[in-house]
Image (cartoon, rainbow, N blue to C red; front, side):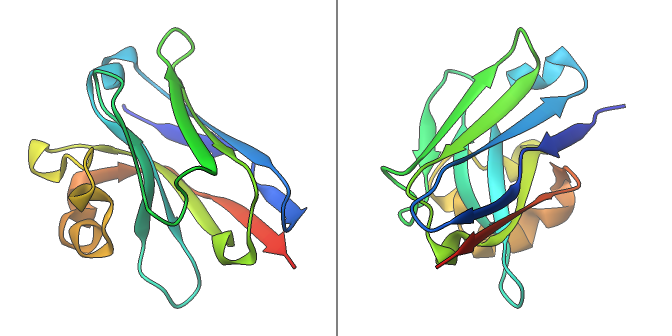
Length: 135
C-alpha cells in the first residue's frame, strides 16, 4: 500500500514561515515525481511545486522565490518550506505523486489547474493539511 501523510500545517500571520512534511510509505516512490498542491475554498486544486526523479524542481509563478520543495529519500519524506506567506496562500495543501505516467506533473503544465482536474484520479493524494495566513 502506498500512502502519503502530510503534517506541519497551521496558522500564521502574513510574512511568516511554515514548513510542511509528507511521509511516503514505500521507498519506490522516490522513483516518481512528487509535489505539493493546494485548494482554497471555492477554487480549483492547483500545483504549488514539484520535484522530479533527477531533483529538478518546478514552481507555480505565485510561489517562486518564496517556497522551496525538497525530498529526503533516506527518510521517505517530502518537504515544502514556505516563506513570506500571504493571505492568498491560505488553502488545504496536499502531497501527491502520480500513480500513472499520464499524470506525470513534474513540469509547468503539470502544476496547472486544468492538468490537475484532468488527471485527478491518476494522482495519489495525501489527506491534506490546512494552512491559514492572516493579514
